[in-house]
Amino acid sequence: MLRAALVIARRDFTAVVLSRTFILFLLGPLLPILIGMAFGGLGEKISSTDLRPVVGIAMPASEAARLERAHQRLTERMGEQALVRLRRVPLAPAPREQLARADSAVVAILSGSVAHPILTGKPDDLDKMQGDLSLIASAAQAENTLRLVQVERQEVATSLGAQAQARLLIGRVAQVVMFFLTILLAGMILSNLVEEKTNKIIEILAAAVPIDAIFLGKLMAMLAMSFVGIAFWGGTAFAIFLALHGSAAGLPAPAVGWPIFLILAVFYFAMAYTLLGSLFLGIGAQAATVREVQTLNMPVTMGQMLIFFFASYAVDHMGSPAEVAATIFPFSSPFAMIARAAQDDALWPHLLALLWQAAFVALIIRVGVLLFRRHVMQSGGRWWKNLFRNTTG
Image (cartoon, rainbow, N blue to C red):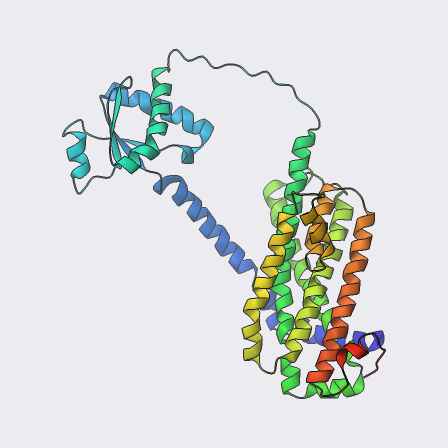
């Protein structure tokens, strides 16, 4: 059966990778990333400038200058998004009249003096900005008398708290990357058999090789195609990282070390992909048309997201019942275990997890084959009676 599965895998892999559309498939994920980076930069610019409320300063020039200097010192330490923006406005007319004008460009007006500021505006706006302006006025009033306390530095080579936080971040990033790749690649398996069922090719294949080999071969082909895509995207991302940072030497290391962590990441992605892929292959094999496959996409995607949220919750709850359950449940186990690899240096749990996940892949493929034979090929008896029985067709 393995030889027949390799024949099917080579056939499907060659048909996909050597097609012209495969180039578009490789370039496809890069376009959303570029668009996301562009919109992310635009959104950050909007949030840091345009969306911050503007307060008018209706004070003499010397008092307004003190507030502006204090505002500048505070934003250098706290960031531009932390405080409101300041803008000088004329001393006349009165603040109430200025706010009532149609061309007014400020949310509220601060008048009076630095020692006794008066803020005029709507009650909701005053509640939001009163604390910021009180801090700015206090810093302005203490401009000449405030003495900064010098903090003594004591440098250490290692901080276990910082190391734990860095490893937690590595686990979360690994989960997100694995989920993104799985949801991007595994969904294509849903429609894998629809075209061949429509063209009656599946009947020819079923007459030549065992149906188990067809399912296993298609799963192997799609997994190999996924690794080609990951190699391309990973190489591109690593090249961009090196171009921006020059070296990866400063990256914090996961608990098991980078070489073993990357090897485990490859295995766990393969398990996550084959677990979901075998399930999708079995579900998609029951569909008769592309429309039915499209109908299945939404619940399948929602199920993937629930699994990811479950595993993501368990990342920072090492040893808790939720984390143990996430490592045992087959579909969340790859995501939970890759996060564990980032935080715990024990290797034997990963061997058990991979064997456990591989057993469920075999079980799901077997059930999918029997259901396919029963409902699509109209052959075989009760599927549960043949679950652990060797078949050749």
